[in-house]
Length: 367
Image (tube, rainbow, N blue to C red; front, top):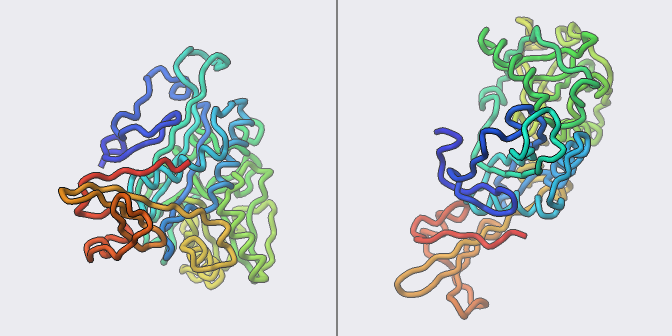
């Protein structure tokens, strides 16, 4: 299915528009010069209903990225948080990927963007394991790319910027053409930097190592999450410069990212890492990650932003208000908002998704 040809809604400059109508002019400045910033956010289905993982942390990073490039986002953090929730709600999603994008408009074309307006779009859609379900369990094959990651003073690597991903695309295309699943990129000094779209860790002698950020790796939110988990589990964490051959003799290695989640690396440059399978520390951190994002670890409940889903339906006999909260459905007739009864079994079967018999589906404004 084409990303452009879908049912649903996209939040575009303050309002929800039908998916196919969320279009932008071909002379949009960011389309030509790459000056834009974005986020990748995930919503997970929990026992209490859909919840967005570390929503405010992602929104804060979006604003930091915009500040680095001198872009003024015309909405507050609260508005964009609410808009991301609304995208999940309006599209009836339980588990999904969310993509906020900040970009310059089409008022003028040329290197300078001083007179161009700043626009914001947010889309949400179902997206499974980025590097494959098998990859999560068995690990993936990785190759070091011939393309070098940006120098930190070239494209401002602290920002999650559109222009920063050209080298990631080149690296990914290079290695997948040769039969590998993902690329590893070195920094300009020849040290390990990151994957094409992921941060990277190795395990050796019970210690967790990850490249420090001075080489240009993105300060990943999932990276920070894993460091927090490791510290809780008593696993020493070292952020430092790491050479390529250190991965060849590592006990374990894995990628992290909002899309990649926690994906083991079983092989780098045709050399098996450790046993060539997902290692015990990787497995422990991965299990902890999925427990947290799926709401099974109350200690990190504050990292989950619940999405309350409300649908409205009409029938020949009465209007019905169905409230899907915490995975349960309740029903009340108009004018009897306090009177709640159990819904028919069809509703219970659809408690985590869209009610099949409903004729009209709409969501209240999440803000």
